[in-house]
Length: 294
Image (cartoon, rainbow, N blue to C red; front, side, top):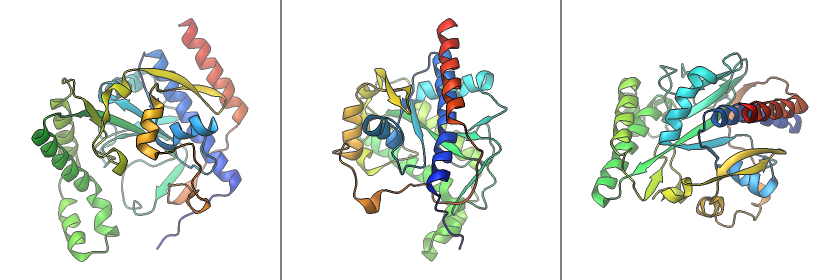
């Protein structure tokens, strides 16, 4: 079995700076096109608790409502710096198997254990999560979540058929992996769009669920945004970040025990590009200047 790579402190910081470069690009596109986004997960926690990356964190997350995600997808067609970056979802990569987007850094490589055989484009990435309306009516919501669960398992099947140890589940994943991924993705988007116009009380990211948010989050969280400091720069975050982080982490200002201070990437292969932190700051400032003048 391929071994997980443990990055040195210098390599981890290099990885973080590559991810920061991609965040700067997301911010540039969103501000140019009046698109609202927010730092998410450990990235949002890092901004509030550390004013930057959590020291041991090796990934970066942003989130959009579904409406804003679709705006971002369209804006990337015109405004993304395609010499450096690739926006990945099922409409830009026929082999992509997940129900949310990623921004990839070209000329890098990142392979997660269990995903060696996937044909999708690779490279260091940040996750672009898509929060959709969650039906209010209890039975409708239950059916919706069951459909999303099934679609999520079909997407995972190409990994599960190799990684699953239980022989029955392994066989089920093998069968599910034969379902055309394009049909799965189009079915998912059709289901999402069915509830896109309603003003539901809650929203959720069913393609990347977490136990703390299994019942969704109040849609009011996504109504107002502020700028927060992250790596001596300013990026967007939901104004009610305190509510969101308490749902996600509880007492989020409390540091976890030492044994839990580790990243989540689980990569078996990295190929990184050297990054100049000062150049990234200059790029950020130039973007801000252009957006003010534009």
